[in-house]
Length: 178
Image (cartoon, rainbow, N blue to C red):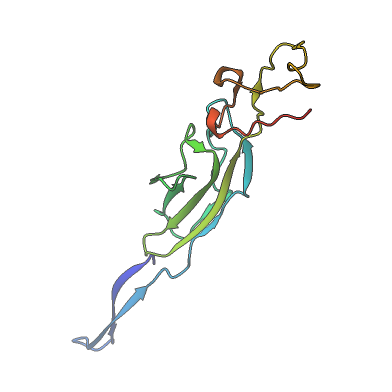
């Protein structure tokens, strides 16, 4: 019997003429109290692309194993992105989902028809592994400052001389040594 409530009726009849009968009824309640089984992928770290994010590929982050003893279970997902925004849906995280720079958490929840559920989570960490670009000024040949025995150098790097795919120019730390 599948999960549900069943009324059972027994009837006993003897061989007398006319036949004598006895009837009894009882109820069987079949409950699915087995939790589904769900195994997530391990945590991963991926390199950010030129837009400072990572678009997932189809099926790359699907659960490793999804099983329930009864049919008609529902798999749902929630992604909490690095900026705390979220997306949810039924099934697996779609290919092409854009994971942001930083730690993103994916949670899968499998629920069966009886309301039993299990969840698992993993992180997709998107790392900025691309260094900034820097254009140095041309070599400088200068005379010492007037009346001094040294030259005062005032370094300047303009916005167009340094950039990074994941940081604004004003967020770059630019130093120099002599």
